[in-house]
Length: 312
Image (cartoon, rainbow, N blue to C red; front, top):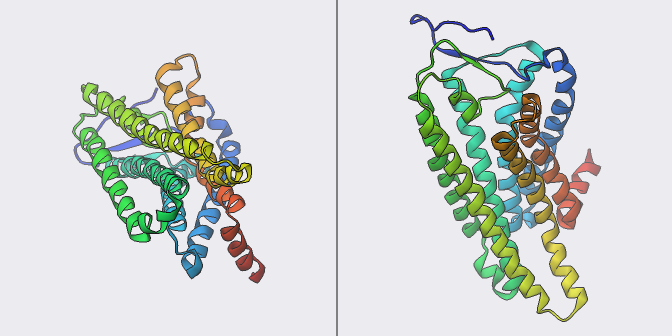
């Protein structure tokens, strides 16, 4: 592997290899990523535009959809533009500042995304278990406060990752075998002790995913218990239908994330190229599917989108 020496006169830069071993196929690999990225941008911007324009959609559920759309745009945009520059123009260099900034935003957006899914589970819990009090408990102001708490949590959890990386020494090897500055990928090229980085990364992963999934599971256990107490089958179906879109979004969000984490930690026999491709799919597939899922499952939003589409 080629290396280059750090010179005192120039700024420290890293080299993102893209997908090692598949450099000749970068152009072809970029096609699905570019298509998925454009679809995700169009879908999420459409959700933001329609909800913003329509007074009838200024409700807690649609405010949550806007928060989800913003985190989806943040996740995909923190990774894809640089990845496409590598695939198309071979622009592999990135400054340390740029690398740490990218790492902060992609991880913060992921943590915030998980917080939004937890808030959505809380919204569905109140809607089904306490329908008469829903309007008093779940308000736009309350959702905004929960969103702010999620944002603060994301910053407090992810900022130490960037600070820990900024203190590491980097010697001759500045080559990152990835398309973006993932925390462990950057830490692994350091010539210093990264035990603290590894431990903190694992703690954050278990706390964020473990805690959030536990809260979501608890919400759905209470929802199922409440649904089973309803005697009418029609009411059963109606209550469960209100959760379908959220369950689909959770599956598209957490499944690739958990699979990527598990294969990265325990799948030593899996080729590195597979790890990298899966990690990149995590940042484009959920953001692409989420607005499609909610557009298909939410009649009010679907009708409003159709109204603006017919005007074009």
